[in-house]
Length: 266
View 1: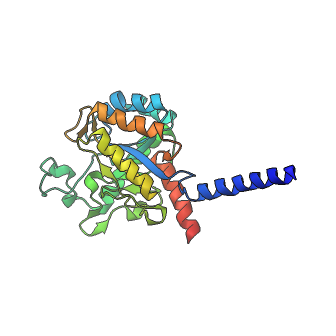
View 2: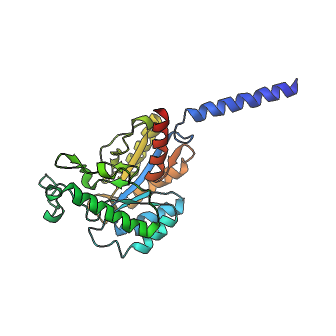
View 3: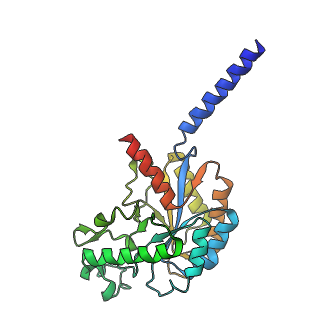
């Protein structure tokens, strides 16, 4: 009798645990959070990586070379890749659509109005070669500079979909696995938000069981779009303290997981 009761309890615990895991769609966790850092800034190496590494968190760094810092940073990026961070493609020269409000920084030579799709795709592929020379990887993701996805009326990523498993955009939302558009992944851009404000995003993602992608530029300086060091640290420490319920991983790993789930569903 006692053995039967014990077996019944074990079976109940197994069913309960399995059910709970099934209700947590992100590898048995409530949500997924991807930390992304754009432009290949020096502060990503000096200010962001040390905190991430100290907490054992991995992120995606979308690297461009429009400030001519890439080659000076190569050893640091190689070390980051060795610790599990993703080196994502953000093009060679960060071309954006000029002639728009707030786009005064766009130079004519990197203005998408004067690009062809072929020129843009060649520039992206050239950056892929540079990144592969650093990390030896062929699977990676892309981030649209300025969130611009088209040249005139053409989506320039279309010919490159075999080169990238996903591409990150800039539209804020927290989609569930089945809602994610892998070639325009939503994200929340940080511009002087407090640690509490960013943690509120994470809590919302946990409640919605969605994907939260966070986009940083400056970290403690280095860019006009910035997050303070205390706010950045507060967010990362919250993620670490709650990693039993939050899957924190680079974009390429999360995208691979989403693709498998979406393919299986269809």
